[in-house]
Length: 456
Image (cartoon, rainbow, N blue to C red):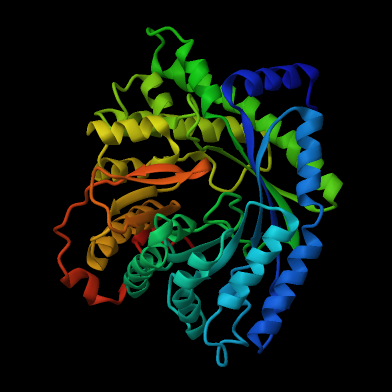
């Protein structure tokens, strides 16, 4: 489909007035040929691969931003899940931290903001190599700046690996304690998934899946300020069909801007174009808020009655608008609800309108899950286990991706704040239900796959 001059003009207005940006250009990169029985050799091979393959990523992205006048907020790399390439080294290696250090060094060398893929897929069972990678996460994330990690512990086809859920709850606590002096920042770079996708360009959960080509360009587009502005211009008497149609039409235009950048980045880098992920991801900037969209739809304050319905309408309309605009829509595509990154959502937490339980309900209809949630630092592993397990059940039963990025705020209590700065914003520490008990977390085993997994 040809991109017209009118589309370009509309896009420039969105950029100048409503905070439209290309949230990320992510180079997905296979490092499958980097394995070696010596972990230091493996790490060096990973570094060499990234330093060579990604050397032009940032210059090309900056050139495209200048030429088209569309900001490109982040440049990132996603690699093959590192647990998959360390099997040969696992018997001799004490841990896989050297590979994380190599990823971090390469990210600094080529100038990208983050590199994702210090990851393992354990939805049906945990191998020795997977266990060693998970054990490496607290040190890896607390001693590196740009490395992100994810672990997939559940899928609709496999069910939920409950042993892995408890292990990840313990790993999150260890990561928080290791980085307590830096506001528990390691946990902001760690995601626990159900139904993780292989082509997600957004951090912290990005990795380059086994079904992908050697290298691809995946682009993530975001424009909550654009959608908010359109909805605020509607009459208060517009019905919800008109609201949905306005969101669809707007996201169509936003997606076309991403399609243009994705095509050009792919051509100039000589790398296959992968997917376009249209996800309304907020930032701390004024007006760049998903919560404000929900309020523009008609909810009194985000978290109040009607919030889940409004979010469901938004998420569905975003997906429909994106699919109309491009044949390459993938990733997660929809609406994100990261608390620390959305100024209006932070206000809702502080006013008492938005609770952790309401956020959980909202995750049943949003694109991801509980994202950038800060909880008191004295929370126990059993409570974290329960939060993660509940979110995994939502994903598995409903055949959707759900994630948990939760941050125990060591030394802080409900009502205080973690200050990350930049895109990660500031996270109000939310109270949690303390009645998880200890029996469920210790039972272990596998939550069986639901009946709707039998699709053959």
